[in-house]
Image (cartoon, rainbow, N blue to C red):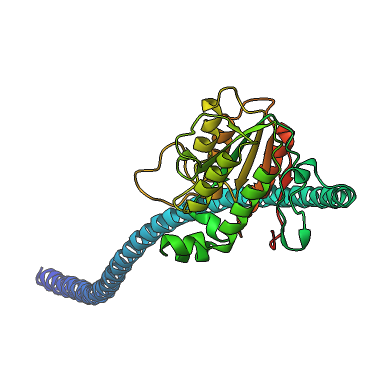
Length: 366
C-alpha cells in the first residue's frame, strides 16, 4: 500500500515537470517569434515610410513641373493668338498688295498701249507734215495774196490750216502757261510785272500766229477773236457775239491791238472757251483753237486751289467737248507744254473727229 503511494507521487511530479517545461518552451518560442515579428514589422514600416516620403517628394516635384507647364502653355497659347493675328494681318496686306500690283499692271499696260498709239499718231503726223511741206513749196495759199505777213526768210510754218469758212471763230488761250513751255519758268514769270509777261517768247509766238491767221482771212469772210483763261472775252471790246468783216482794216487793227494788250494769267477753262460758240449768231462754220495743253478748270474756279492730275484734266476736256456742235471743223494750233503728253493726242483726236487740222508750229516761228 505504501509502495503504491510512492509510485503515484513520483509519476505526478514528473508529469508536472514535463508539462511546465513544455509550457515554458512554448512561451519561450512564442516570445522569440513575437520579437522577430515586431522587428520585421518595424523594418517594413520604415521602408514604407521612406517610399511614402519619396513619393511625396515626387508628387511635390511633379506639382511644380505642372505649374511650369501650365504657365508655358498659357504663354504658348498667347503667342499663338498673337501669331494668328499677325498672320491674318499679313494675309490682308498681301491681298492689298496683290490688288495694287494688279492695278499697277493694268495702268502699265494701258500706258504702254497709249504710248504705242501716240508713236503711231506721231508717225502719221510727220508723214502729213512732209506732204504739207511739199505742197506748200508748189503754191502759196490764196490768203497770202490778199494780206502780207512774213516770218524770217519768208517761211510758212502753219500753212496747213485752210481758212475755208465764211464765219471763222479764233479762240486764243491767254492763261499763264502760254508764257513758256516749262512749268518752272511759268511760275517765275507769273510773279513778274505785266510788261515782262507780255515779252515772254512763247506768248509772242502765239500772238504772231493770231496775226498770221488774220492776215489769211478772205475779204469776203467774217471773223471773231476771243481770248480765254478762266473766262472768255472778245479781243476787241464791245464786239461780243458779233461777226466782224475781214475786209475792214480798222476792225482788224482793233482786234490785234486787243490781243497784243492782253496779259497771260490764271488757269485754263476750255469749257468757257467753247461756250462762246453758242453766243455767236449765226453759228461759226470754222473754229481755230490756239492753246498749249489740257484745261485745268471747269466752268467756275474751285473755291480752294488744289492740284489737278492728268485724269482730272482729261475729264475737263471731255466735258468741254460737249459744247462743240456737230459738223463744225475745229483746227488746233498747239504750243505743247513739257510733260503734258496726253494733250497732243487729245487735241489731235479733236481735230480728226471734227474734220479740222492739227498743227504744232516750229519753235522758231515766225
